[in-house]
Image (cartoon, rainbow, N blue to C red; front, side, top):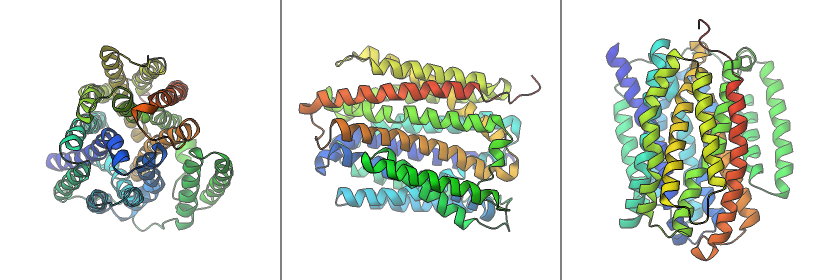
Length: 454
C-alpha cells in the first residue's frame, strides 16, 4: 500500500510540474515569440488564453468521465495527448497554427488535471492528504521556479520552440511512470454520462470567457452564456447522474466558499508573471534569461512553504491559514499597482518573495478544504472543480489583460518605444486584480470550519 501511495503521489506531482513549468517558461518567451511571429500584443496573448479557455471547458466533463471509466485511464490518455500536442506547438509555422495547437494541448491538460488531485485523494486517507497535497502543490511551484530560468535560457541561446520539446519529453517520462500505478478508481462505473449537460456547460463557459476579452460583442456573448448556464442548472436538477451535482455546493459552505476563493485568487494573480515578464523585457530592457532569473524568487518561496502550509491545514483551520495567505497576496498586488516606472530590484524581489509566501499559505490548505468536504465517490468531480476554478480564474485573468490591452494598446506592437502605454495598462490590470483578491479574502473567511472537533 505504501508503494501505491508513493507511485500515485510521484505521478500526480510530475504532471503538476508540467503545466506551470511550461506556462512560466512561455511567459518569459512571449516577447520574443511576438517579435518572431510579427504578432500584436493582443494576438500573442491568445497563445496563453486559448489554452486556458479550452482547459477550463473540458475539466469537468473529463473529471466525470474519470469517475466513470477510471481515473488512472483518463490520466494516462491525457498525459500522452499532452506530449503529442506539445510537439505540434513546437513545429507551428504561424501564430494561428500555434494557437490551434495550444487548443489541443488545453484538452489534454483537462484530462490530466481533472484527475491528478483525485488520484492523490483516492489513495491517501484524510489525515495524510494535507501534507501530500502540500508536496503536490510544491511541485507546481517547482515548475514555476524552473520555468522562467529554463525558458529564458532556451529562448536566448537556442529557440523558444525548444520549450515545447522539453515539455514533450517530460510528458513522456510522466506517462511511463504513471503506468506503474496498479490500482484503478472508478466509483461511478455504470452511471450515465450527461452529454446534454456537458454540451451546455462547455458552450456557456466558452462564451463567458470569450466575452470578457471582447468589447461591444462581448455583452451579447455574456448574455447568451448566462442563459446557457441557467439552462444547464435546470437540466442538471432533473438528472439522476448529472455532470455536476449542485448539492455539493448547497450542502457544504466549506466546499462552496473554498471554490469561490480559489477562483478569485487565480483570477487576481495569474497574469502577474506575464505582466512582469513584459515589463522587465520591454520597459526595463532585461534579457529573457535575466528576467526569468528575477521571476524565480516567487516560486522558490512558494515551493519552500507549500508542504508546511498543507501540513498545517491538517491540524489548524484552513480558513485561517488560507485567508492569511490571501490577504498577503492582496497587499502585494496593491504594491504592484503603485510601483514606480523604474522600480528597484530590491522592491521587486521583496514583493515577489512576499507574494510567494502568500500563495503558499493559500493554495494547498484551500485544496485540502475542498477535497475533504466531499464524499469519496465525488473525488473526480471535486478534483475537476478545483482545477476548473484554477483554469477559470487564470482564463479570466488573461481575458482581463486582453480587454485592457485592446482598449489601451489596440494594435500597438510590444516594443520599448511603447513602454509607457504598456506600463499604464499594467497599473490598471494590477488595480483590478487587487480588488478581486480582496473579495477573495472575504470568500475565504466565509467558508466556515472544516475541523469541527476544534
